[in-house]
Image 1: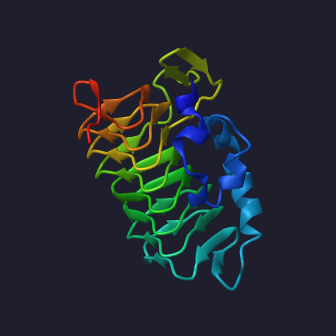
Image 2: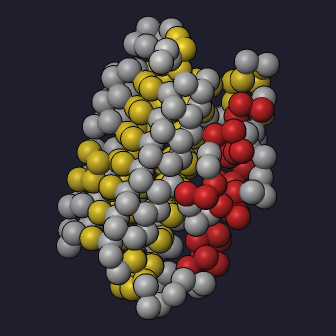
Image 3: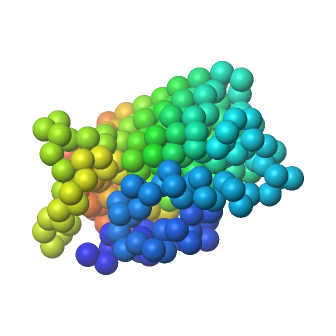
Length: 222
């Protein structure tokens, strides 16, 4: 199960949450503490670099937040990031540098590494998106099972009982998710992998792979 650890999925130098994430083995273990982590981290940010438009909301002075966007506490918006019209950040969101949070995108209890793009009509909840990952238009993370039972992570070696009812998706660095795809609860996508548009994804997608529409996974060729 080494291919689904934090160390195998992410380059931790590309997020302010790097030290926090080092305290866990698997990424879903970090979800329950995101709110407290942001609150503690926010207090350490330099007020010369970050504005605080509301309590427990920190926005880098080089970031662009459109007037119709909603920033719920606690959240941190990194340098040179765009939060576009009608974006809805419900809270507990750490958004890195050079990110795009686009039109009508909703974020809740998430860590977005630097250079992540969620540009069009995405829902990302209880999830971690690695460096330079991209969610195509209309793609979403589903974070609760229809039967409301705890999420199970399905690895090649079997099932991992998480005991958690809300887990979205864990996207490694450089992941590309095609338009209108659904990432089911507990989906893990390895670094440098791609998801075909309109896919319904579950389980673990290995590093440097392609998930096709029929669920077939093939290795990328260079």
